Image (cartoon, rainbow, N blue to C red):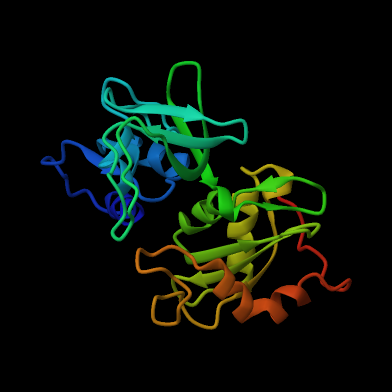
Length: 253
């Protein structure tokens, strides 16, 4: 939604004077997209939360905003980072999930399943989901949400799923926003790769047969990639991208 709003504002002179505070969350937001919003004068602030903790855990504000972070934890919330970089939260926590016999309390920490860290100024950063991180054949950890976020910020790419577990390079399954050429996709990927470390770059891609959706079971009902379903559907095509003759299409200039 933010991407659409930014693109609208970049292509029109129509002012939006009634906007006071736009909070974005639910998925990682590209710092480049947030900076574009700031340049346009949009009051956009990224936050982070989970239903188990009464929704909002951390939030940037006009007086304390650091792009790239999800803000500082709210006063009633305590955040800890484990040795494995998992984010733990306690505060206004839920009592229990439906059907559970054991009741939790606000004194218990919730295992969020998210990987992140707190900087010296107290801002929280979220790097991805613990269960989704994969390790390349060179031993580098890659959070696919991070790279997918950068791909989807492009005006040409609507959806993306990144894979590279135990492989020498990463590949992406891409759903374009419109009919575009291979050269356009490759140019877009080169531009994105220029802002990524070498271990996170996309070296090959394939076009999806159809958009990811809840109907074809490739998205959850909340709009997140179901990676196992997507991989199983495209497994043969993904594996073909690692054939010795399928060389990467190059690094950004």
